[in-house]
Length: 224
Length: 129
Image (tube, rainbow over the protein chains, first blue to last red):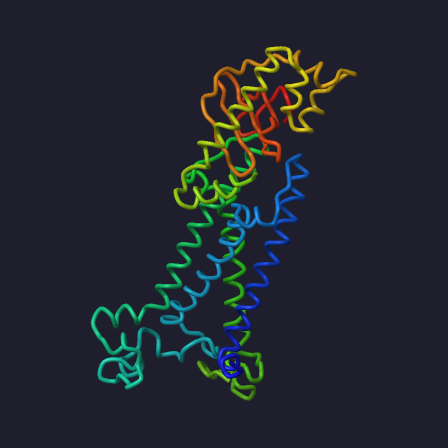
């Protein structure tokens, strides 16, 4: 048990943070929703009612889609684009999908390689893109969920303001949908840009996300 | 009482097309019909009991109570042509005007009635709004 916790401490740490943050968001969201309801002369809802509402769903989904988009783009862009000096980047000259030797496939397969990597053919192709595909799928589903739940929440707001509800087609080209989407995207892209650039010049001793403290600014793809 | 919030979210997530228009829409439509029927029948107390507290306040004027003032309102109304429910709010389209309702623990109450569209702006309403 102790060993399991130590071996998986990083995943467990973020899992606990995720659960606590989601619980906190649901409680703060209930209070915020009820304050708006009272201001509009409406009735308040319980926590259990709020967490199955479209208001909660859209707030969760809009953040999820942007996070998965961020990692999807980071995973794919770093195949083809490099940043000299950044530990987040491959060395210049290694752009692209790399050789079978570099990727330990085909003749270079290892005894302990995953079975789908050993399989070759379509399974190897699928497995060789599985991380990006899953991230992309979760992004697409989260964005779709944002559009559906966002429309439901928006229409509730429209009715409370004595305005007509809108169709899904109208909602996905609306200011509300794109404001929710782009305000999340811009912050994610800024965070990636900061990580790529700041890690050229700054260090965090002991972190694999940083270069070793004594590494040169020009050293690329070196993790501490 | 507020199962429809979940219902609206679930249906919307599955279909992406509409809120829970059926059962809840019917309930909202019936509340709208009862309100118009109470006004046309001169039953002011009953009509005001079907208004949200804020809408009832908006009807009171010049020393007249809600029950007295509400029966003097002229609203064309007509039969229910359709209803949409989103979360705790509903819009009921009548033959000649539109009603907006909000769900409270005791059921659907009229937030605004006698409403006509006003371009991109909120509806113009005789009651509430």
